[in-house]
View 1 (cartoon, rainbow, N blue to C red):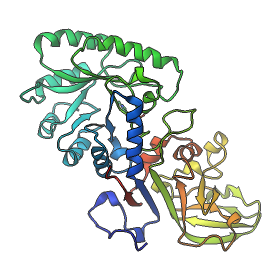
View 2 (cartoon, helix red, strand yellow; view 1 turned 180 degrees about the horizontal axis):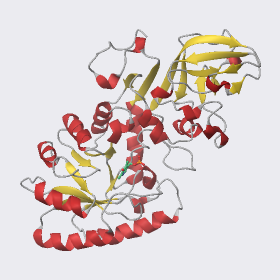
View 3 (cartoon, rainbow, N blue to C red; view 1 turned 90 degrees about the vertical axis):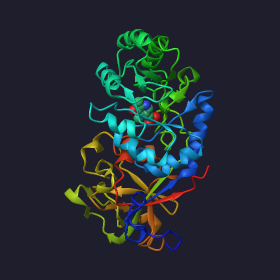
View 4 (cartoon, protein in one colour; view 1 turned 180 degrees about the vertical axis):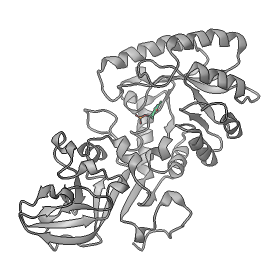
Length: 395
Ligand SMILES: *Cc1c(COP(=O)(O)O)cnc(C)c1O
């Protein structure tokens, strides 16, 4: 523990004092930068934006944004205006786009003050931005224009976008710096919708010769250079998640989540473990009690037994300790999770050891999958009780 930096109480992205925390997250900003660069190679000659919504997928907006800036990233996407305000403090000169749009007529003052750029998602957003947006010397009402090509979430229809382009050509009221769309199935190579969305996007793009074009998220970045256009917007792949659902993950793990063992106990075959007595020990067992639970985002659905998801997804989650995969036993509880460490023997494990929950040995996607969810949800659920330890990041 001696090599950890001192605890700074108001430095909130560090989380809890390591001596007082049950879990620790090690966030490898060098791996994050390596992932960013790999995506850059894939996307060339397109540029790579940083998608840092939801506190950079739970990893910490500030340190992640600083690392991406150091790697040369100059364009960012966040979901909410409040996230944009926080990012502006770290990235004084970057383009910051707000995916959820101008958020009604009360927010634009904040957009102007912080030079935030809304993603315009509807005709209503267009009129709000035209009436209340900001200008500078070179551009009036700068923004991104989002066209829906098959996701049916946010975005103008292609017809609305074309009609806006015709009107705007006359008035020049709004400057769409970027025209973008979002793939529904980017993680599934060969899904028919990818090609349909690509063609719809190419068609609507023709109305906007002056704007940069952007279609691909992480998955889309691996679908081929047709999908890259001028700017790609990968989130999960930068954070080490697998962007494609079948192929081996080319990204480096960025986050290592570990739980401190606070007690070891021995129990006899035939006894039960955890709430609901849902798992019965098949052998005399050494149980490690680790101080991370579902309140830390280690999902209850990853339990070793006794939750409905186990009927569909087998087996439960595993941790990794001293070279061994160790299964979760019984139900994950709020603050604590039990692991079967019998194979390590009584001398092979000690209280104070840390069990890896995911990281270099247990893939993020595996840990998510055993809880019936996806890497995105696992990362964005990580709670505030961890000690957060950042390494590298100078690019
Ligand atoms: C979140 C998001 C992304 C990034 O998606 P990943 O699948 O994490 O790469 C890109 N574009 C939009 C519009 C998004 O909402």
